[in-house]
Length: 328
Image (cartoon, rainbow, N blue to C red; front, side, top):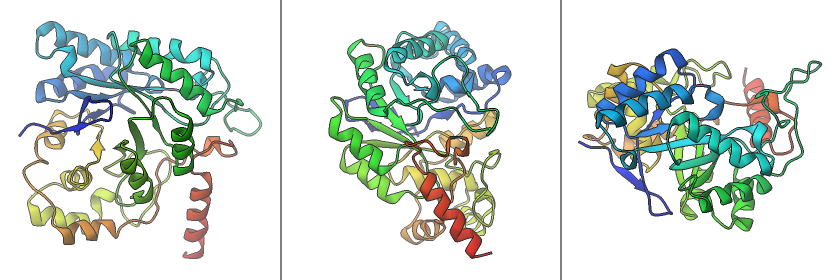
């Protein structure tokens, strides 16, 4: 069965399963992307900060040259990093990703985070005394207005945001000439984000989930009593349907209309994540059992940016830690 598309508010189709490329080493990502295209993947989630866009571009170029795929069959996302929020840097940042990926345009360009770091080529400007990121006073609304120009210039077909909270989405909607077509957020059974997702759906904003399998190898937080892929509830449901835990977690999202971008460099896992989630559905009792795992458990806390006035979930994370400390 082919992968369904999500019809975006700009009239373009976005495949509901893409290949995530965060933390995929440059030395292996070229082959992984070639394998993914051969399997049938057409949606690739990239970002300048991942440091592997040139290698992804090599794979895309080879498959285009072979005639396996055409550019208009691909959906390529990249992201504006925090050190390029200054409006006069936005176009150059976008063009850098386009050049590295070896394409003429992006299907989607996201503001990676609402926080601006010190402008420049140092991607993680850090204060030596505190170890925290060095901030710059740039309003994400001004950055967004510069991103709107990218669509007018034909550099990208659509723009969106990542890691924004409800207040930030509402503020953007109140001033945007072009509203975001996609919000990419961490989303999995430990962090359902239902209120934020409802806000998006009410405003015709598609939702892409990252860490939908629980981000087992994250260097950041590790919420929940079990790794998500090993949770007894997930294992029991997987056994019931004769599926892997990963397939259950991906179906859980896509069945709710959420786009997923599982990361893998294994051809076998890429195949299973892509081909084996569309010929079954979870019943309501199982959906509820997975819903009940929600503990507001966030893997990606971005603690290095705590204290930034536009940090999207510092307060939520602090409340989560207080609750955890009371219960231990």
